Image 1 (cartoon, helix red, strand yellow):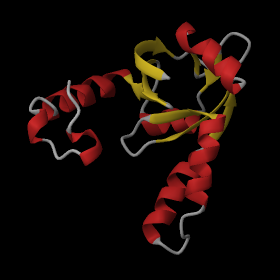
Image 2: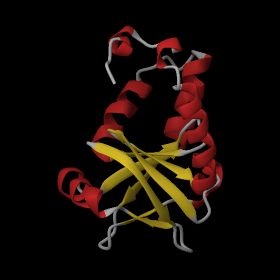
Image 3: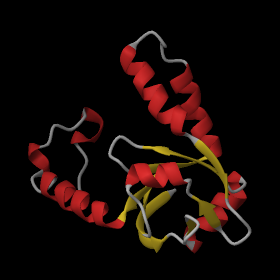
Length: 152
């Protein structure tokens, strides 16, 4: 569904223009409604509302007396913000979320099939270099059985 990397700029109000190739899909299939929340890698995750609702139900069913589950619920649900795409195809990225991810103006939107990640452009370049170094020797990675046999 969502794939690829797009460089973009946020305007002075913190709005980002959704790339044209994703606009119709977000509008037609998801009514232009998304949820933006924090990601442990210090970026933001942007989910279409329908997909977020599935995730939120799973998070809500986690045991609240389990410390790890509670931390995850606090991070993801506690920071989740509903945003509607405006008539010009823009999303308002809330200030506290931009601050969390260190996003000021230049950003990178990366499709991750069912969601997007929104990164500060400089941080993304650093992280991407690390990811590429980590996967240079794909045979040495500790991959789950489901993808260990994947042929690239």
